[in-house]
Amino acid sequence: MSKNPFPFETVSRRNLLKLGAATGVLGPLALGTGSVQAVNARIHVVIVGAGAGGTSMANRLSQVLNGAKITIVDTREQHYYQPGWTLVASGVWEKSKTVTSTADWLPSGVDWVKGKVAEYDPDNNRVILEDGQQLGYDQLIVATGLQLRYEWIEGMDTRLIGQGKGVGSVYAGVDEAAKTSEEIDQWIASSQGKGLFNLPPTALKCAGAPLKMTFTTLSRLEASGQREAYDVEFMTPSGRLFGVDFYNQFVKQRFEEQGVTRNDHWTLKSLDSDAKRATYSVEGGPDQVKDYDFIHVVPPMTAPDSLLNSPLVNQEGESFATWMKVDRETLQNPDYPNVWGIGDVMGMPSNKTAASVKMQAKVLEQNFVAHLQERPLPAKHNGYTSCPLITSIGKAMLVEFGWNGELLPSFSFIDPKEESWTVWVMKERMLRPAYYAMLEGQI
Image (cartoon, rainbow, N blue to C red; front, side, top):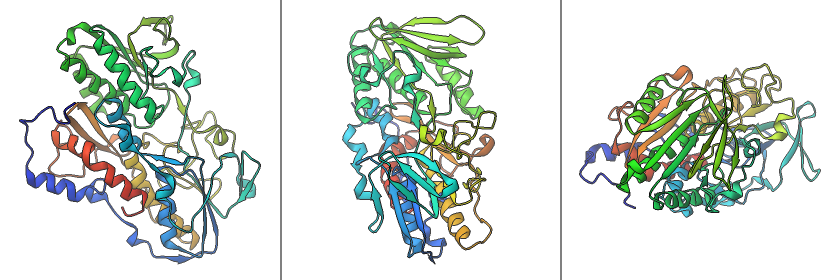
């Protein structure tokens, strides 16, 4: 498949050079660790999770803490560039482009414990692993990511993906993303049928991914020359497609233009994969059943069970229940000042993207060091998150915003409200090297 189906669209060489120079992910915001002075700190720092947030913090803190012991806890031998999974599931990338070794990104001197936390005990400054091992800490950083709750959808099993039953999900893993693309190809090869796309009833990582999967699939359907033979429907539990009003309206209008039927206040409840039938609970009405030829499943998401059963989580009745409790500006737990959060696990609006982690890592580094020195916490997270929203294969919009949906554009030459090939180039060719620089604590 061509990486650029718009060969006659041009973008100025000067702007591409600017884009390349700036892509430390999103240039004006690409601040390194140089502003934080190294300190002597004979402490034990435990980081739970070796994903984007945990690895970034391991590298940053190893540069600024003299004499500290840093332990990172995770079982994963492979590190995944998850922002690339939508490109894999869309048939644009091979899955190998998103896979590296966890060990390649961890700094020398960091102790890697290949285990999984079963219990958090912040009252005694320790975590307990599944094998019973106990790790005491002076400072704890929780960077676990989130838990995909496929089991909350009756009949759904990620092993169904790639079995020719029309089930796909970009979130399940890189292998499943590749199999999702194959399932879409099989649907298209059938020359007809219905595709169902869904949002979950919870917060989710990369909230734009379900929309991207819909738009790239529409591109593939249109490229078949038989778009009218396929029905496409999109289900929203809340009635919203995107948290920022402008993009919410944009997607609604584009779906209407591209013949996508939208069903608001529908939540995926169960699947019968043999019959290719999905059941939805509908707000204020009876359950509805839809036959499908392809369905893209987006599961509900929560913090991991070990955190849900701990004092570190927001409780029922609090904002962002089932997510880690942090001050959204300082990233510090308000009940346990030596506990910090970063990444998807935290309870705050949106902020579950790699671009969010890059900004959070800078804030957390500054506040962490200030806390060790018993100084006021100087840095405040402004809620920045970014999503190159793919609107077709070959075009995208650069969505950047903070608290309350305030737009925070980084590039003067990119209109955040317009689709462009320039942003597609950023997504498809430039953000992966920037992500790896982030892992190393360089930006």
